[in-house]
Amino acid sequence: MDAFLLQILNGLDKGGAYALIALGLTLVFGTLGVVNFAHGALFMLGAFVAVALQNLLTISKQVRDESVTFFEAYKETPYLELWLGDTGLAIIDYVVPISILLAIPVMLLVGFVMERGLIQYFYKRTHAEQILVTFGLAIVLQELIKAWFGANPVPISAPDAVSGSAAVGAVFGLGEAVVYPWWRLLYLLFTLVIVGAVFAFLNLTTYGMVVRAGMADRETVGLLGIDIQRRFTLVFGIAAVVAGLAGVMYTPILPPDYHMGMDFLVLSFVVVVVGGMGSLPGAVAAGFLLGILQSFASMSIVKDVLPGIDQIIIYLVAVVILLVRPRGLMGRKGVMEA
Image (cartoon, rainbow, N blue to C red; front, side, top):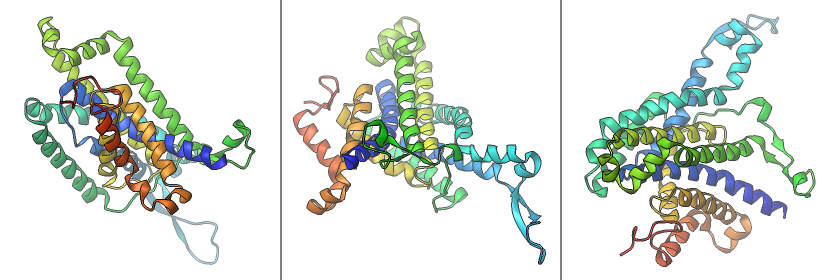
């Protein structure tokens, strides 16, 4: 039972990342009809917003180490610590939460520039052309990050206050021995909050309802005198923010590197297809479902029987679902069907 609970939590944790990226992909496809292969790069850019802020906050100078009395010794001390003391150290410790505040305007700007500078010219082009141009953009962004930050992963720590583990076993009556990292639990909670915020925006605000109407019938909404294209540009920016925030929060779990966006993108596209192209609930549900399946497939007892199953389980499930239900779990009738 202990292993079962931990695998469920691992699956929800990884599924949360899939769900957030897939949610942004579905928003873009549902509003603009664009298959955006650069969306994984937005996840990566969000993570490197945290890396850039950490590098900025930890700029240091050499200061004599007074604890060494035998000879003159020096240590690297961040300027923030020299200027602000313990407050400066606390700011450095909370670099990931602070990065969230920075990532929102940065990713919104990146989304606007991408949509206005490139994506808008491919609205009426084929999906194959959209995939090629956005995939090329993703490679360019990857190489820029590689050139600036290097090819090696950059470790970022969670704040000390949440760096330990929670006794989740006690909650389910399994004892104090079953523990799970606090930050991973916070990531799951963060995922639910972001998903809830996006759905609330689309379903409970007038702006969001107009966007949903435009997704269903763009021409009719345009005839009512509403500049639906401007609203869709904002939606593209929101999708970029969602992907970027997912990347920021994932940095203590997986040290960022220039290739992380592409790794998540491929799996997230499978999630979108399984959930149903254009279906936001389907993207979220499929993200968590496939994350849990992948988690259980990674157990030693399963891999002993089926070696390598954890690497292909998502694709196997996708093949089965699409053979039985081509439009996906929650896709609209007629989408991806003959």
